[in-house]
Image (cartoon, rainbow, N blue to C red):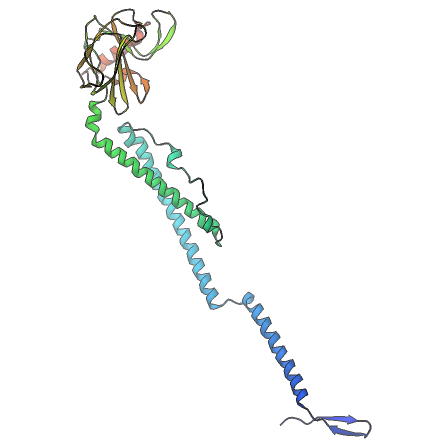
Amino acid sequence: MSKVKYRYNPETLSYDKIHKGYKYYFSRGSIYFMFVLLVGMLTYLIYPYLFQSPVEKRLERENHQLLAQYDIMNKKLDQLEMVLEDIELRDENIYRTIFQADSIPSSIRRAGFGGVNRYRHLEDMDNAELVINTAKRLDVVMKQLYVQSTSFDEVIDLAMRKEEMLRCTPAIMPISNTDLKRTASGWGYRLHPIYKVKKFHEGMDFSAPIGTDIYATADGVVTKITNEKTGYGKRIEVDHGFGYTTLYAHLDEFNVRRGQKVKRGDVIGYVGNTGGSTAPHLHYEVHVKGKKVNPQHYYFKEDLTAEQYDKMIQISSNSNQTFD
């Protein structure tokens, strides 16, 4: 039972009973309602900053799990990159060397992705830097794997054609020279026979009588036959494939035609004294992928002993003058 309240009346010098009307109760109720509403709003606004909801706890737990998975993924990428680097080193230093294939530049193996930003859609994520870096590493590894796969396809093709490549590799001297007496002048700086100045001799000279047989030093196709009054004189060039080309200069006569296929040991022409030549001889060159190289490294089918080979190198090196 609620307490009865009185109010002192100074006019009657007595206490009058206070009667509470609906306005009183309405105002009191409004105050209570406003208070509860205020407390509710404050609780709604402050609670999320002080306490996590079950949904937020679940999302935070999932976020931690994703970060852990990204960390594991990056560690596995580290291991994958180490294995891939080892495979690439073997490919460059063993497989491609054995089959004399061109090296794959590092700029191609590790090339990035230029142009349009491929990761723009990831930039708004909370852990954008981590996600983008991981995506970039994955893309680079995938490209390296593709380049390596293509390289192995090429090496496998070369392995399947190894026997053909051996037949197409210059491997004999271009004239009969088992006694080495026809070795004249080799690779390196020599005295020019006409101008009497030091000039680099990019081949090897073999002195022999006019009409001596000249042999193709490997299987191939005759790509050039020329007849010049100076320079190489009558010349034959043979493309052997696999990057090899040989040149035979100062010939007296040809024994092949342009476009003809030849085998190692076929007679393709005869020693002469044409062009810028001062005596009957054959000037012989070996080109590998467009670059002239020392022919003395391509005489491994002559059945020469080590002593004979050393003697041939010594004879060609001692010569102070070329015939062309």
